[in-house]
Image 1: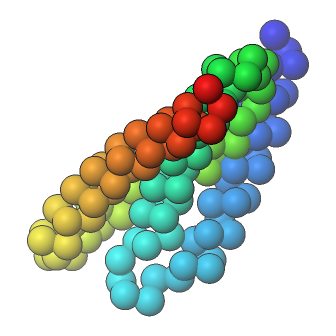
Image 2 (image 1 turned 30 degrees about the horizontal axis):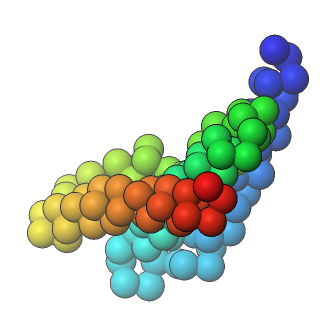
Length: 123
């Protein structure tokens, strides 16, 4: 069990560093939290893809490292929530609602696409 915690910790550190890198690259040029949106969509797609690959190829032993650790550290729903609330509090209710809708709908679509791709390639 202690190895599982170490996998999650290592993966979380890697995922968090990757998230930070995406946020630096994305910047906040438009005033929208595009880095967070990008991370959530890409992370959800990767979650679907990796979940299918690990399930179909017997890689469940890597789930703590990759799914819980790396992707748990990479995706940012706590940051998403803060970003949405900040837009709302700044009086940008339309942008806040659009941001929430885009984040949820595109992230769900990305998970479905990742699962379909993984199943199509590895099944």
